[in-house]
Image 1: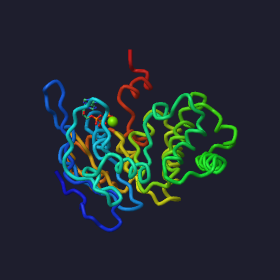
Image 2: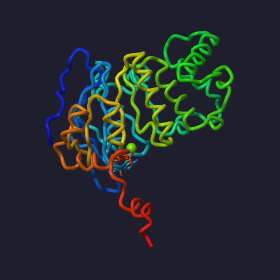
Image 3: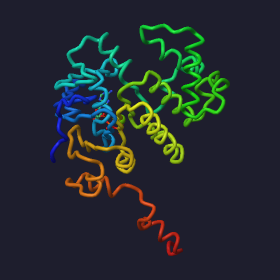
Image 4: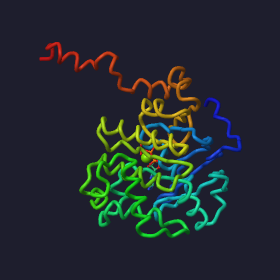
Amino acid sequence: MTETPPVSAAPDTVLAVRSLTTTIHRRGVESTVVDDVSFSIRAGRSLAVVGESGAGKSMLIRSLLGIHPPGLDARVTGSVELAGVDMLNTGAAARRRVLAAQVGMIHQDPLRSLNPTYRVGQQLTEVLTFGRARPSRSALRRRAIDAMAAVGFRDPEHEARRFPHELSGGQRQRIGIAAATLTDPVLLIGDEPTTALDVTVQKRVLDLIDERRKRTGASLLLVTHDLGVAAERCDDLIVMRAGSVVESGPAQQLLTQPAHPYTRALIDAIPRLDGPRPRRLRTLAEGTLS
Ligand SMILES: Nc1ncnc2c1ncn2[C@@H]1O[C@H](COP(=O)(O)OP(=O)(O)OP(=O)(O)O)[C@@H](O)[C@H]1O
Ligand SMILES: [Mg+2]
């Protein structure tokens, strides 16, 4: 394992994770799905967590937020400091308040996070009523409409009245980003936010996340299995495998000088437009395949 980024409590640290370890118990079997993971993110910076399926990326996110599926017997140790709050030693109500105010979650599949029976505009106004202040209905509606305009809806007054299933996957993800950024959180977290979208829409959604961050100064924690996307969009990377961090550091350094064979294998898996065509395709193109 190479050097982990400093886990200093610099004054502008938004998230500091130290030795986070998650053990789950299933049918009498104990397994460590997040193993001694440490990293930190400063204000306005971005960090990507990359690794293959099952590496523990989602478990890491759930563990640091203190959110596990009902019925899952998970034990989390280590420490998580979010916006100055010691999240693992804080009561559930206070933790929920910190999460509602400071974290914007962008889910992989907004269909699962959006309520199918509410119009999308209503769902945005609901996000705004989590806080203590209760603005007027018209003020709430105005903010929801403005938020939809900010994520690129051309006719938000009209589109706010749509139900989630009436929107395309890309439009739903834009609603997801509007919802995540509505309260100006200090940290945006995306767990594979573009995996369910086709490639051209993926780029637009990632651009939109970047654009929103530029405006609000939010930090980003991006989970992806795509090292190419991670390196293009984030300042720092951690590479996970089987629950552990195998390598971490500045994105460009990891991409150009990977120290670990697993990181090199992930780099080799990045599709390249300028690279040699895969053998089978070349054979087909040359007409030599019988
Ligand atoms: N609800 C659950 N109950 C039991 N085990 C789980 C549950 N969710 C995940 N696991 C286990 O935890 C480990 C890490 O899974 P996790 O979902 O964090 O992987 P991941 O890196 O997010 O993968 P993917 O890229 O497929 O989303 C895996 O071994 C998985 O089987
Ligand atoms: Mg996952």
